[in-house]
Amino acid sequence: MATSGLELSAELKTRLAAIGDRIPPHVRLIAVTKTFPVSIIRAAYAEGIRDFGENKVQESLAKQLELRDLTDVTWHFIGHIQSNKSRKVLEHFDWIHSIDSLKLAARLDRQAGELNRRPNCCLQVKLLPDPNKDGFDPSELLAVLPDLDQLTQIQIRGLMVILPYGLNPQQAKSGFLQARDLASQIDAKGMINVKMDTLSMGMSGDFESAIAAGSTMVRIGSGLFGQR
Ligand SMILES: *Cc1c(COP(=O)(O)O)cnc(C)c1O
Image 1 (spheres, protein in one colour):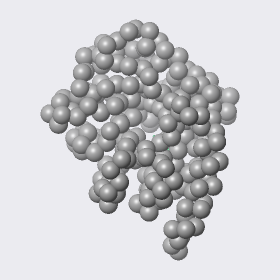
Image 2 (tube, protein in one colour):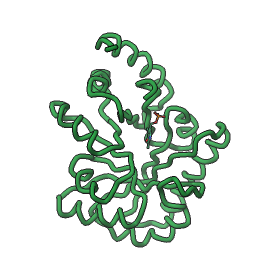
Image 3 (tube, helix red, strand yellow):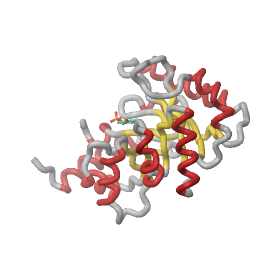
Image 4 (cartoon, helix red, strand yellow):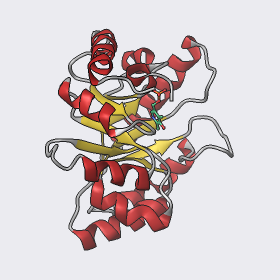
């Protein structure tokens, strides 16, 4: 059954007001619209949202094409990047949150040069070892920092963190604090090209503890748009 535009925006208004109240002004809200149709993105845009997160290249490009009249939107890529998709990601996204290997970073840097793009990027970190999750282990990340610092075309701005499911609020808080400490540790090295002014952490279920731990960008989907 189709929801009318009116109902859609009334519900979104309510949810956005409730979430917006819990996000301080220095924290940027990324509305995660993966799996949701363009009608939802338009409704969110009408409420003033300008940052949208997507995790699949094909799906997002189809939506971006339909939404090309919205010229002041910032698109954020938050999903795993297969190497044959990296060029498309560079062409169509301003922020790339999900750099999960040195190899990918180097590839993006080279292609960004060819395409004359300077994307803002985050390094995705996995705080606990997990073979099924993408991301740098903290020790691995510290080891490749000198190599990352050689990359001058992409703009490395900070870290992106996704915590494992099912943590209690205390565990989540401690995970986010660990991420912040890692960012401080990296920042203290005074790298030239690796900046640490951004912490992309916090989703619908845990954004308040992420903000308490120093998040600067929260990525919220279901809390705004309902279950996928
Ligand atoms: C889907 C997704 C989100 C949003 O998750 P919600 O729980 O719906 O808020 C945030 N970040 C990433 C990387 C995602 O894939």
